[in-house]
Length: 354
Image (cartoon, rainbow, N blue to C red):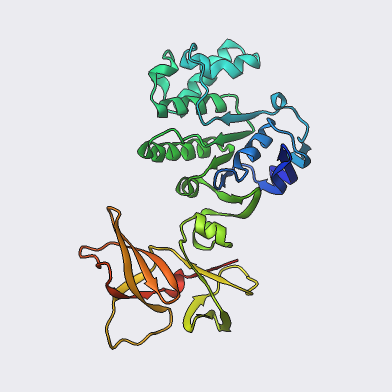
């Protein structure tokens, strides 16, 4: 039984539907990320769970109780905002203690809880400081401490690291996962950063125009995207619209303009009408073309159209008879623009999507 469920939820702003017949279930103790582009409904979903928004229709069930009409002040949920929202005139201790005092905890209990949570976020030496004295990462730790000090039933996080630099984001996402697992707190995390979500989540729900296109564990999302939107969003930049297909044992043989491709059957079942194949730029293989070499399955002749240096590797835009493909490759002596090459599509890296 899921800890909470959104059931057939619809939300609209000024006659524009943001969520329509939206469903989501989360188990106790899980960290589930809502991932997708701007405007897909991620933050709307989070605010609905928090109680800041009302659903046009549908139900929010929490712990076997209908929370649809429970006001925000009656929900014991913690919220970490994008912009910290710390009180500048209060000390770090009093910022964290604010919610406890509203709940009329004793000063003895407040002292214990605040110091415990400061230790959890590794900020014990800052109790007497003020927010303006802290770095961005330290402010976010205090915002997290304030959200968890009341021991909420659910922790909601709305793009909490968007204001931090790249290196600090990596450090902070590790901290979030450590804290979440230490406390065992059920967490809903919103982001548009796919690497961030895959790194910290038990499950990732990829959203598009108010619906979840796929909700799976990070490995399944990364290796077996189910739709073209999901594949493109998480880095599959090469797509082939196949003309025909046929089964061949544990493989599928697909053709495009006379070129044949063998693909492993995906882990889940598909309706194979009008399939699209996709592969990551890092998984494509290039090699120099020999004049006498014959075309094999999963192979295309190509010509380097554009070369871009990315630091660790080169990115090549390769022109082929069935379209252009993006290839990332580490090379000490990179192929030159205009060079004829062979483009190889490894069977295990090809994925079919709807």
